[in-house]
Amino acid sequence: MVEARQLMEGAVDTHVHSSPDLVERKLDDFELVRQARDLRMAGLVLKNHFFTTTLRARLVSSQVSGIAIVASIVLNQSMGGINPWAVEAAGRGGAKVVWMPTAHSENQLRHESAPGVRAHPAAMHLPGRSAAVQVFQADGSPTADTESVLEIIRDRGMVLATGHLTPAEVDRLTSRAVEIGIRKIVLTHPDSLGIAMPV
Image (cartoon, helix red, strand yellow):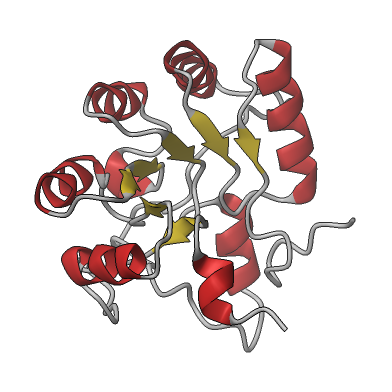
């Protein structure tokens, strides 16, 4: 039987939350990366629902060698939602993964409005303001900002991660992404109760 430590060798965790964060996390960036390196993992993708991890990844990489640290950006309201400027800045700083909205996706907010469903740990609301990030227009096509973000992802060779969109939204978004030449796409959280992506 293969031991868990052997399975970790050469592995890449594509979705890791660490501190500093606005949500309590078990490990800070440095301890997380040291532990992963000591397990001989190949790399980690740092994810944060509120801020890009671009500069954090660069800092940790400068202090801990022997493992690839990949930065990302999540397009929730704290990043301006579907914000091409933020994606371009993250890309210039070295981010490789762009997540569609998670805590502020329309799907996540609709799911949380059901009786008995707890709010996402990264839920953030401002009085009198909608938290929902608009990825699509009323006709179901991507907004102009979504198109711009997809173009930046394509041009910079970044990875598109689908966040907390519905399966139907994922179909529309990824069809458009493939149509314009994006080749690195990750369908995320498929078994989350608010997404429940069919096989």
